[in-house]
Image 1 (cartoon, helix red, strand yellow):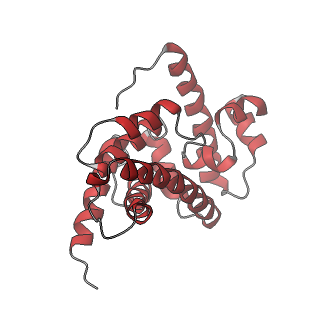
Image 2 (cartoon, rainbow, N blue to C red):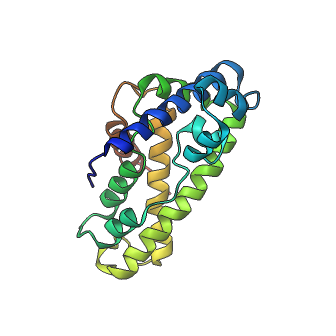
Length: 207
């Protein structure tokens, strides 16, 4: 799913990166709990109003998670685009939604270190749970619309949606927090590598 960026979108991306740079730099030095939104705004030379035009909370700026929900265009793309692989379609949706949020490798390096902060980890878990629920709902709707896409028809669409969402969620965590990742690698490639790792690892599991 490719969307061309307008000049306005490019300027918004630049401002967002400046905020993320300030947020991650401060938290990397002081810790998540000790850093305030006011300090981030001062460091980024912006107002609180501008901050909240881009992020709904401190943790979204620090962790790089999109605070907005999927757009109508993104939802339509997911529900209407022909596919034979629902996991692949889900990953493409997530990549588009997160475009620009992990583009700077220095910020990515800080986020990997910040992932070890207990307060940041708790905030990340809560935000990932909310996004996973949104993704799972979309997957369920698509499975109900196209039941032939199911890989495991023995379970309800809701259950399969949770399984697919869980795979994507854990791959996202590995792509941003694993000590083995190369933060200079584009985020899309890191996510692909993390997905391969999750899938290959699960093949060897027995219960």
